Length: 560
Image (cartoon, rainbow, N blue to C red; front, side):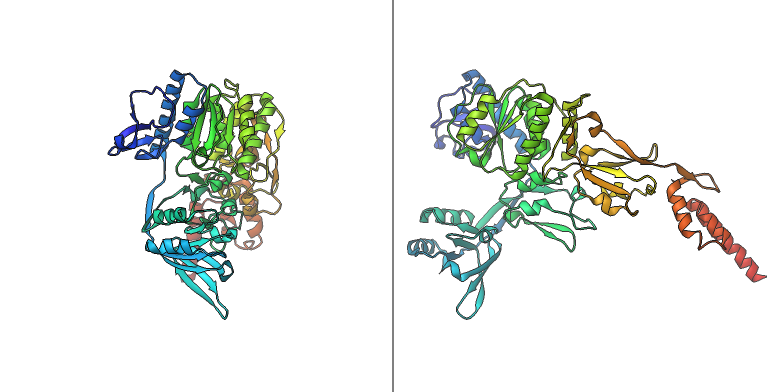
């Protein structure tokens, strides 16, 4: 297998580096396979359609184009090496249910001619569809009853949204008969798919929680790829139903969901290649339909995989590693991406007096963004993101922008939330339940001074710390937005206590408040039992010794 292939037919002449094999036509490379290629005309592990888009539209000089094409190939190399997706396959038969109000005899005949078994119905006869491609169950209404029928595919013209949430269900209005046949043949007899997400339950703010909290990933999923079981507090994933839009990834507050093809760490590594360039983030699915537009010198496409995957960490990585403005092109960005753009621009305006990110949904907005985008900006900063969570990347990158300055506060949205915790020290026993409940690291138990500390930039407002506190009216959580001053990104003390020393051996074993609280609760019960009363102020070892000694003494007295 060779590394880089370039299909040149139909493109303007361009000079490329020697490690790129140029093929003028398909026949020339029919026996070759590449890791990265610019066109599906060549056999490759991964395609980079942004290469053709760049070559056809860039105003860069030929030598600079050659250098930048190298960058685009290297970016895809990094994506290929760092991807976390896996290959899956499933056998799929040829049973089709067609729901259409207008006659489609020619379509039915064509499908049957190619071995498909077709049941043609009207839309009114379809009550419900569930399952997945190859194992769909369709509830059909008859005059007297309803019948459930199995199918491999469900085709419908004029579908209701719920009828397209499962894999194997397709809207066919506007499609020609041969296009429909091509879709079915591409998925039968074997359906190939990959996982689009990687899940880390340890930092998920729904999975395994005692209280029912929001699962925004489930709320934004357009299919049944992510569902939740509220009884067990579990998320359920169906990779075969995932369409890879990335909406769940961008809306995940803690970073528990990662985009398998382009995890944040890999995104950040690719962003480093764009130093001095203006990144134009564009989803791979939208490159083919992107309008012809002249890209000014220095503008370089950044091919992303999911149209809705971009979040605040991605944006900060792209703008700081490039040291430039960032442009996002696409009509299909999600609400979380729009919130991220607003938040980052709010921060940039407060600190630098200008927007850092431009969101372009059409040609006119793209042309306008290209006029305003600039390189060599003051926010340039490089960060090693290895091992850092989404929240930590955000905190460290914005902290670098703030420095030692103070620039006010920026309001956050409904999806990107930040909060400040306060603790009533009078009632807090430092049991650390709140720290154990926090899985983003916002709350921290500092053993060096027996305190609880808060880094507000890591808080997601999940409220689990409040729900986990055993003391009434002790913890309060309030939304705060992003405060652009150094203290917001550092740990501040919320509560502190001295350690209590065992009255027998002198070993420190618990906080003074915790010991005294238990003593107050149990004192009345142990009033006539001095040994038990004494154990309330002892460590575990001494407690056991006192009770064993008491049992021995009682046994001796009984024997006498």
